[in-house]
Image (cartoon, rainbow, N blue to C red):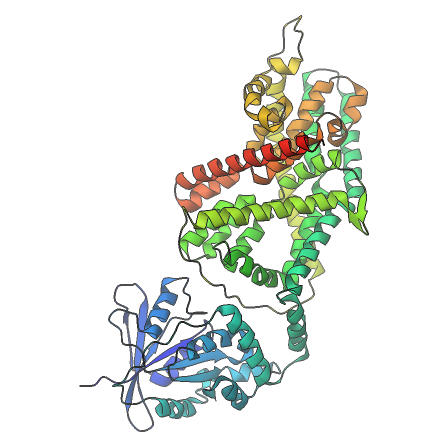
Amino acid sequence: MTPAPMIALVGNPNAGKSALFNALTGARQKVGNYPGVTVERKSGRMALDDGRPVELVDLPGTYSLDPASPDEAVTRDVVLGRQAGERRPQALLVVVDAGNLDNHLRFTLQLIALGLPVVVALNMVDMAERDGLRIDAERLAAELGVAVIPTVAVRRRGIAELRAALAALVGDGSRVPEPAAEPVDIATLQRRARTVAAAATAEEPVARRITHALDAIALHPVAGPLILAAIMFLMFQAVFSWSEAPVGWIEAGVAALQNATKDALAPGLLRSALVEGVLGGVGAVVVFLPLILILFFFILLLEASGYMVRAAFLMDRLMARVGLSGRAFIPLLSSFACAVPGIMATRTIDDPKDRLTTILIAPLMTCSARLPVYAVIIGAFIPERTVGPGIELQGLVLFCLYIVGIIGAMAAALVLRRTVAKGPSHGFMMEMPRYQAPSPRDLAIGLWQRALIFLKRAGTIIAATTVLLWLLLTFPQPPAGYDKPAIDYSVAGRAAGALEPLVRPIGFNQDIALALIPAMAAREVAVSALATVYSIQAGDDEAAQEKGLVDRLRGRWPLPTALAFLAWFVFAPQCLSTIAVTRRETNGWRWPAFMLLYLFALAYIAAGITYWTAVAAGL
């Protein structure tokens, strides 16, 4: 007996597919699993107008035939006739959202290219019309070359017309079409989808027209990346130029607190601990709060305006070349704030190899904890001058450090995806939100929360680490007649002396070796550690104590050493919280250990290359 013809119901998630399936099959449904996988199989019986029975199979929603999950793999395999124990469908009923046509047509075009008979259900037309959007179904059918039926599945509108269109396509089910060639690439489909959607749109609201006009520029293959680079460049220029005044105010406030503490307390260990340890160390980090808030102001602004998703779309092409998809962009972008939430955000990545790679490269994104380190070294060793109209050298160097981190992350991903995280890469699909004016209240709340997080970190981790470092730098005190600096006799001084031979080849001195150890707790602790070291070394020298860390560093290090220090912090995984969350997300110590090993190796090599190149150049 010849089985009833099978029609597959396919479409993007949230297109109203389930409602249409229920409207067509009613209670005549069966639910089970596909052979070999724990993916639900829903099928139902439907009678055509001439009484012929048809089996309708509701396939899992997907954005393309390039699967990123078991559900999406089932959809691909059924449509292409690869699913074990499953017939290939006689025809396809493709459901698209009339209000999001250009995005949903990508998958539709991919399905039409397979060569199977196709009927398109233009669903939720009532919602689109309510928003002022009207789609010409006849023009859309002409552009696609298949029947297009307007429907409102929840109200059973268009169901009769849909049955008639399907009856015209389905034979007796005895002949199943052979699989066609593999579909064309997603980028080509996206361009074609936009063209078809534009041609079929008879009327659209002004806001939608503005969005399309802006996207034509923001998503252009040439103009789009240039705009993104210009926005990033402006961001880092602003970090230095806008923060100069507020940084000065905080520095003056910290200095006033130090002087007040000196006046209130007699010389001794308590005064030294407060002035040189707490205020000197923590204050050296807190002064960079304005830089961090300016950076996050831009990030929040781009997210709230709807541009950030466009940036992810632009980065997808670059990331595809190193084996990642645009899905990794949002977690990596979060890592610019902090690698911890960035690594946690990889849970949205379905492919395990893609997710592992993203976790392993997330620490290479220049997080906000690196900003105080960069700001101190740039402020001390990079001249404060312009190198072009509106281009400050210090901001340009900061921009370059961020770019080096991104390039390093992409290079690491390329290697990882071909070695320890080898596997196929997947395409990237994401709905584009509309552009909108950011809410000043939301921006203010976001900045306030970021300020609290930074100050809490400064008041807990950094303060505790700085006080501990002060103790280790102060005790044991040298005996009478000790002819070397007192700091060398301390526990921390001896530890730094043991580490120095390992880092001397890359240009680091004992002070830097000392700062690297407590900076494992948090990167910005390197700044407070250096401030504490130099404050203790200054002792009772009032002139030296009044200098900020930037002024103290000038002339103390050669320029090649300073540049090597920057290169080290571009790559070094100096953050215990990052290691801890990596261990939690990967369920073991294997990958955190691997991360530590390869990132420290990269940091050492990068610092060494930078140092010896700078020395050879005579800097």
